[in-house]
Length: 109
Ligand SMILES: [Zn+2]
Image 1 (cartoon, rainbow, N blue to C red):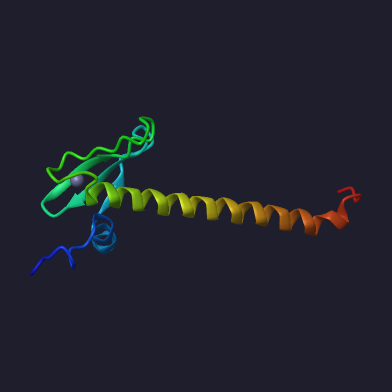
Image 2: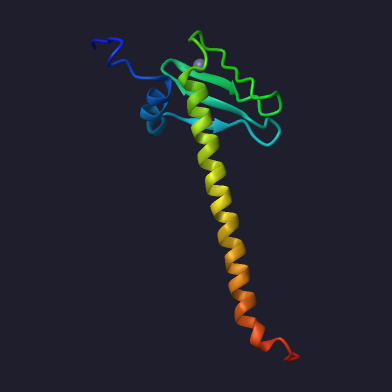
């Protein structure tokens, strides 16, 4: 594939292109901000440095920030957005139930 300075994709573009077909897994509650990210030849342990002033690290040899870091960032943004949407849905459901029960407020069971 020909690559010129005009057509060369950015790290972000590469991450967005590859994200749907690669595995990005959080390393768990004991490792906040750390992800196992599938690269072209194996998995890299990416640290988004959320408790370290955003000092992102990836052990791959590419110039930083690499697309592994970008894919971990995409994953984190998506899960944060989903978590907020779920919390909003729960809050709205609770408020709807309370609104429906309000007319019964003075009724004793
Ligand atoms: Zn990397």
